[in-house]
Length: 366
Image (cartoon, rainbow, N blue to C red; front, top):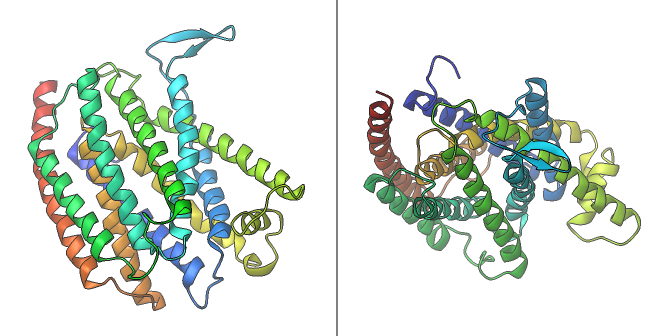
């Protein structure tokens, strides 16, 4: 980043700003392609295919072009006659988990009866809780040597109030709940389990690096994870297409997804698919900021998870407002603003925690 030190508050703010800007772009473009009356009104699965491709192309291009995949290992072990970094045995699985997180996130948005706002808040709130649990586990394991500040716990509390307001008071009344549908809960459970293990792995990597070591390379972690994720998604997509062509797999979600790949110039996608891929590149850029915030130096999973998820919630609300002003979409409801107010209270306590953590890090480096 520009003119900021690794682990500094200024660097954290830069990451948050980048995350915010590109998440807003992602939120507006998704709404444009899915619901705007003068847009293509793509099927959710069609958009999933193109946005994932666009995001993956960006991430892979950067990590391969700049060779971020070069990992300084703390230990190498013998595997199939070769000496390989021990970190690969958990970074590669993290990439596989990422390949689960990406489509399940989009699928949660595509279920009828569940608004994008409610789905987003439920998923973000769950990750905030998971991050706090992971800190507790890693402190007991002796992996995390820091304590979770009182202010961080207070911020978690206010964040959960904001989430509760959206779930129980801000949803689309009369429509399906994430807790009443088996397909929704299956996808949601896959999202939670994959993300939980992924966040644990990211924090394990961060918390087990020797102090001031070149092995503390988040770029290498991101690169290997993205390569693993991309390979996994390619193989799964290829399998789906082959099974579809053999008439062994079909359905209301499979058919539009496969057709978006094998016949992009027909139906709704004709003339729009390349724009959808281009728009998906913003989501790929978001991935950089998201991972680097989750793995931010010197911070607990609780704090990093709060910063990451609350930034995306504010960005989601901002995207909703921009889409309403520019494309005639619906403005946030009063209950949405109340929920956002509690989020800003959580941000206030996070700011206090960050000031304490910055002093702590400075004293450690003295």
